[in-house]
Length: 355
Image (tube, rainbow, N blue to C red; front, top):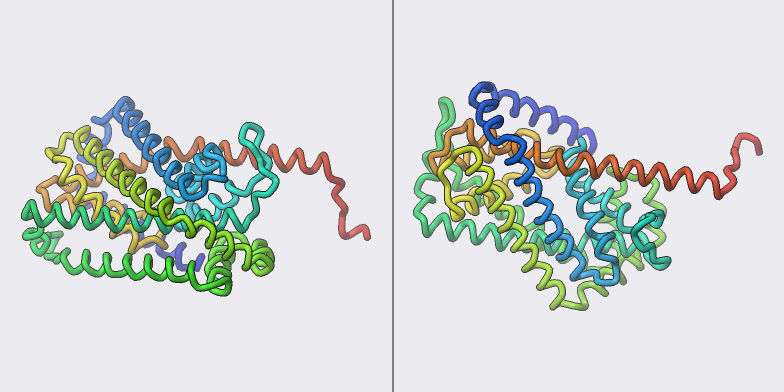
């Protein structure tokens, strides 16, 4: 799986570079620079608000986990997924680590917080986020039909080729639905399937977790059952996630406005909804390199937006993610180093070779 992600990363990077050359680097740089530091800070501040909202959606299904802990875990999940050369799986693993980590100085560290609860809370949170995303995509489809924009889906032209985005979107939504149904079904089918799911995660990043997963499969299932035993909380979490997706579309609208594109909120929702479909299909590509740029360019063309503006929007979104993500990842590293230093001082380390 790691090799596939690496190959896809370089393919996506090639697509990104090729797209930049095709669109025109001069126009991209000029549009990107026109936003300025003030615009970038506004966009980043809005994204911080969105992440805080998503953290609250997580807290709704896991009220026993402190809000500050979940805010930190959510920031770390987002930062790892957008700034590190991992697929989305990498962000999930760091988020699990953040939830069950007990070495924080300014966040309460409950003694009964286990890796089983950390994994199960992440899995259900991702599920409710995906369900909210599906509703968001349906809203985007409704806006597409109401605004008669769907007629242009079959007339998207790239150099020398005409694309029919209709079938691309239909296939993407189909796989998203199948994936969501499978994820929910697996969570309700017993510890064996949960163990397989978590083993998949552990083998991609943290091999050392496998023994703990095998030993605590029943705990995973019990923890997940406890979360799903409160359907009202799960439903509320889905609704909050939907609001978060809509807020993300407002962020896209702001980006286009700063770049000088003429677009309304309804059109921004359509673009962001179908970009979600594209990113879901290419979830194995680290940081969605190339996928994100191509999706914005193709979907922006439906509304007559110049390709260089949509390409600039994608780069602006990456700059926003870096502005948020890099400090988060640096703080994470400082926290881990501080914990390791404290642990090494308080515990005698035995050298196996001396025995």
